[in-house]
Length: 272
Image (cartoon, rainbow, N blue to C red):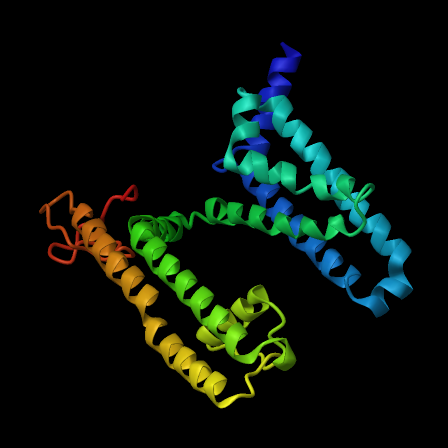
C-alpha cells in the first residue's frame, strides 16, 4: 500500500503537468537541463577547459547522475514503464544520459549530451503553449505531404551535381585540384548551393564556363523546394482553419491563434 502511494505521488510530480508539484518539477528540470548545457558548452572552450577542467568534470557528472536518477524514477513510477521507455520523451531521456557513459569508451562522446536540449520541449506543456505545438504540427504535416515532390527534387539535384562534378573532373583534372570525381561532386554541391568556399576553383576557360552555368542553375533551383513547401503549408493552414468552428454560430475559417469567433465573439474551444 505504501509502495503504491509512493508511486502515485511520484507520478503526479514527475509526469503531472496540472498539479503544482508537477509544474515546479518541470520548471526545475528545465533550469537544470539549461544549466547542464551551459557547462557542456563551456567545457568545449580550450582556455576554460584547461583552467577549470576538474570542477567542470564534477559538475557535469553531477548533472548526469541527477538525470540518471530521474530516468530511473520515471521507469519506477510509470504505470507502463516499457511504453514510456519506447515513447519519444522516453528515448530522449535515455539519450540525454547515455553519451556520458559512452565517453568512458569513446573520448569526446560526452559532447553528444547537447541532445538534452530537446527535453526543453516540455516547456510547451508547462506554460500551456499547446497552440504553438499545433502550429508546428501544421508545418510537419506540410513537409510530410510534400515529401514525394521534395524527394523528386533532391534526386534531380543529385543527378545534376554528379553530372557537373564528373564533367569538371574531366575538364580540370587533378592538376587544378579536382583530384577525384567525389571531390569534384563536392565542388558542384558547394557551387550549386551558392555557398562557394573557394577551396577548389576551375582554372581553364571551359571549366569557368561550366562553373558559371552551375552557379546560375543554383540560383534558379533554390526557389523550387521553397515553393513546394509554401504551397503545401498554405493548403494545410486552409484545412486547419476550416476545422476551427465556433460552437455558437458554426463559423469556420478562423486563424490558428484565434481565441474568439470573428463573427459573434464567442470564445473558441481550447482543443482546436
